[in-house]
Image (cartoon, rainbow, N blue to C red; front, side, top):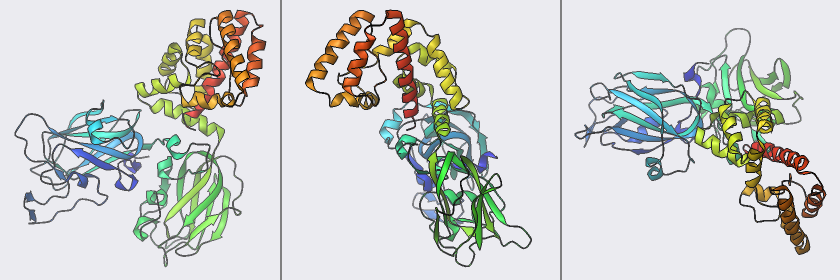
Length: 478
């Protein structure tokens, strides 16, 4: 797919915003992300100078250069940027560069000015009154950009093309039912037969369509056949509901539609109504796990929105864990891996093994690396856990040891005693996969394992730690 056919991660309609600019004396920074193409107003001036449709700083009379900070509407891997200097002829910057970082979307400008930024595009020459496109080669997902112009001047529009990397935990987790065609959940419109009146990506934008121009619409078909669009879901899913919305399309809606996967029907050819939100549940045919769908419209026309609601498959969840680890900058990936396993050597080797080619490779790598570690590395991982019955330090540990929270005082006293005895015998804390277990069950297991030989017990504890690590890896997206 051509880079400029990818999603504009900075689009205002997705929540993109220019949070800060060193200077916008002649034209406001907010113009940078306007959806409409820039235009020219001959002879129009403001009290500050010539009216310009873009962001324009004053002529710099001191050292340094100007820059703006942009919050992306959705986090993602940036594949290219378009710096549009349309109508800026004698007042465009000579060069530009880009830096990026990954922080919470709500991070304010003051904190962003103090943040650590990673250069993703070096200082590069610009042409005036032109669409300047630059490819970006960086594997990490970002939330914010710092756009530098040298030394000053005006830019009409900025577009940031890339692949959405959803923050699934902010969306409630992949275990929930989600619209997996939505742009914010990583959906993409890969291709379509025609989009003369309305761009293809409108089909999966957030919220209801604002007007007929806010949907996907083809020209009038004068020959045989029908129009169609292919949508890639954010992850592989089992579909439970489909919504096809023809809102605002009254004399130009499709007569019928169908949905297929690899040539097999998911929704048989079905009659549509004008200006209507159609919800299909009982009409859907089981297609198994689905990654891409084809929406056929007969013979042509406009559709405002397409929603494909479903549950991610287990394989898809593991692939998303791998993608998350792959697309995190090193410091973030290191912190997230350490939250899953406290062994420094395991974390180091996992980072060195990136990128993982899917969830199965991630799981295999996690397990292989774990069993190749030395006993002192295992003990380091054990030491990162609270004792069973102690006040857990992390949310995950609290969830895992929830069974101990309602234990009787006698059971808690017994846990303290058995923990002490266990550590004296084996030299490390009692490790157990605690999720779903009651305090009494864990107490019984600890007493039983006290009978083991130290070498045997170390292996059992390592097996329990690996189970905990795998669960926590899955929690990264759930």
